[in-house]
Image (spheres, helix red, strand yellow):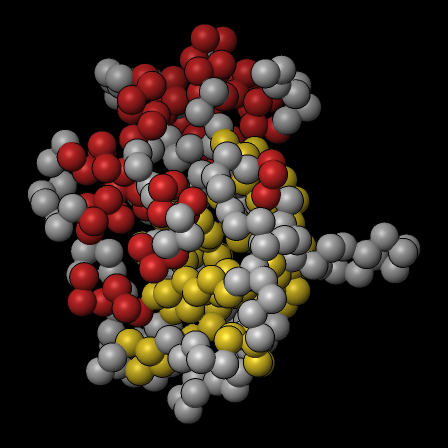
Length: 287
């Protein structure tokens, strides 16, 4: 496949890395969908709305509002219209239609006492992905007692190229062994890459942009039953997980995840293809 010389990530790689390493790193990039605020231009070319942050979800009448037993109701974070997403550009298999709704126990009910973590299975009920099939009768819900809805922000999507985190297991697999002075870890390259990824990043598909370390390893360790971090199975399992969605801290939606953090939902491709969104795993990070 011919890579566009105008793509910012490709240009950055070729400017900062040895040619052979740059091309191998470019080969690890994946297409993703960046979700951005759908702002009217006033010129008639209005953005296509593909989803929204906050507001109130539309759920089937028989679908109960997600609750973490013994803790309380989850907050509605976002939804995306699968039919409106330009998902043909992705390398994951999203449903062609229907809606994905994301819920998270954000601490409103208990002032942040209970935390959702991939290494604590008893907390997994604190984050949910619901799939609402196209044509299912739905009603707009009212938030349960104790939950203040987030302001609604309509979202549009654009296709973008995403790069793997420099410590992602796929990077180690491609470049192993990686000495401490490997070109990918050059300070100038890392700084340039960080500057390129600055800003609010809501994303469907592609590589996750972690705030701390690779989120794939976090969920992989949880899925394996929390072995020691030195267990080689974690890196192997991490390669089986892909990003479903990432929702960043967002001032417009009054969303703040810790100290400028982000929420991540990951899933195995076979579960995504089978629409087993109940098998998606969640983690979050903050700076």
